[in-house]
Image (cartoon, rainbow, N blue to C red; front, side, top):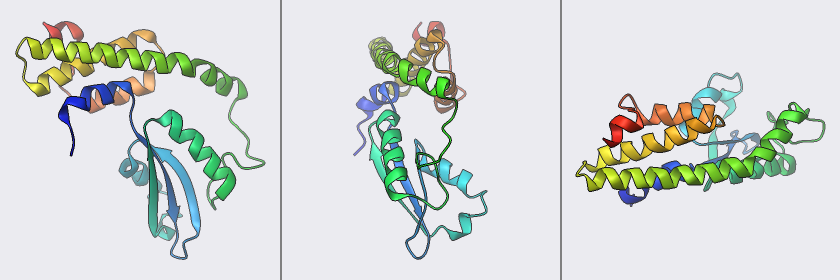
Length: 178
């Protein structure tokens, strides 16, 4: 059962992510990938010429993308997949400097995400303490977490996704908490 009291902390502290595998009718492994939202990711796969060969999908969920992505790379290297070469011998990794920089920033990013969760939870509790309905209090907490992350300048893609999830009711910290 979904516990509504955990939603703001989970949303701000990190999103669950899955490693998924696409198999053909003979159970051959076509693709290994990772994603937050498997349904959305599979929509992107449906545009590829190989999609008609996909018969089933398996998935394994992890607490956050930082765990899922290394698991994906290991699976690709060990299991191989007909349409995914990433991590396998001969695969050309993206710009090495960019990869190195992302790895250097990962601990800082994780710390900031954790802090945004704390800020979001404090904002949710403050809004609830002022009598805001549960949904409004959650949105206030999410908005505060988003603004904190936005101020860091490190999370452009994640901020865009969080704003989209928050919906058109996004408000600034000043209006959400006043």
